[in-house]
Image (cartoon, rainbow, N blue to C red; front, side):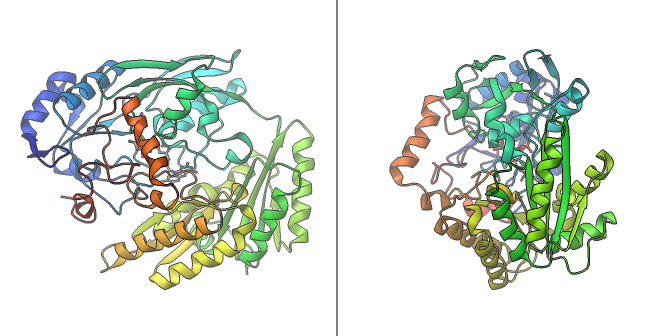
Length: 483
Ligand SMILES: Cc1cc2nc3c(=O)[nH]c(=O)nc-3n(C[C@H](O)[C@H](O)[C@H](O)COP(=O)(O)OP(=O)(O)OC[C@H]3O[C@@H](n4cnc5c(N)ncnc54)[C@H](O)[C@@H]3O)c2cc1C
């Protein structure tokens, strides 16, 4: 049985499967219990709901035929890239069809002379830089999930990353998109030379609620001539957080300024055979880049600030192999936390960098209040906080505790003059919390965007806008009632 967005029966699942097979071929349609389980959530595993079927189209036209069919038959559909989203955006909230971009993974065209590349949207972020690096270019947005997360997902979430501090978020690096609207119409907005920036800025960050991006022109950034990378260990979290503030105000712009606390470092140490000096409570990773000579000079200024703040150990990368080693804790830290507990939930909020010491105190206090473990690994330089709660979701009350802890963190971020999300988006996780930041009129304007793009209730329902039609009744079913 398949439920439509009002909860009514709209099709038998076998009929639905047959219809999809007729549209794009049996080899591109996945069904069955294992598929339903795997695709019932993204990396925000607190809320789950299974799809009836998953489709793997290979072309924009195939996407359009599925989307048109879903809309015509009132079947909910949910775009999905790699499923690394951390707010439930790719969770098929009302069932229906998950449209995976897994097979839309080809680079289609590029011009190094004009610094752009055209790609299908299902390609992994890192694949672009791997292709362009030998020619002196890279794709600057580098979410820590970049080895798997897709360009389509990055666009939908307006993803950031460690180098956002200097180079900006995904929005600054998208020149154009080809996308399928909920009607099934294929539109091209912008292109290799940009244009339509206003429309592009609506699509980037819309979390798959305005249609499905199938191709994108992205900006290529010249590789820096020189990179300086170092880690600095501190004996207190407070000293590390105060050092971040001084570095940000120093006039030297780091390319990246990341922080990891000792909970992350202990998991990383056990997983990757890395050593940090005894007594380390927090570590900063600092990177500078630019023309030859300048990056190393800038790094030395930042390291002196670290010494002034009492850094107990400083390691500077002497070559690119050592640079990669220093980055290991940051790039693999979240995965390593799997050693500490069966479930991890990564939260995301923004605070002014000057409030970091107080905010981290609050995070540890909230975790203690709720009986949860917490580790912090985040983009400290731009005030983008990521407390990661670790716990056993099978324990009674654990899910409720982690949801409450998330709400308390959002409240604190807002109290300190920050924001409900820095880069992980609203999805279903924060859909009710948006009302704490925006009034009803502002949210009404946001919801009008769906009308402008003619995105009906079938298009990624229950995401971003609070109290969408048919979603309130389903909300409790997403938590632990997955199948
Ligand atoms: C270990 C780890 C580290 C992370 N680090 C970062 C980080 O540093 N910075 C950061 O910003 N995020 C980070 N994330 C979050 C996540 O990786 C990003 O949000 C990423 O952009 C999601 O890409 P995806 O392909 O996995 O998208 P999915 O999770 O599959 O989907 C995310 C959203 O985009 C929509 N969507 C997907 N593809 C399309 C498309 N083609 N067209 C329209 N809508 C689409 C989906 O419907 C959903 O709403 C991290 C996640 C993990 C697990």
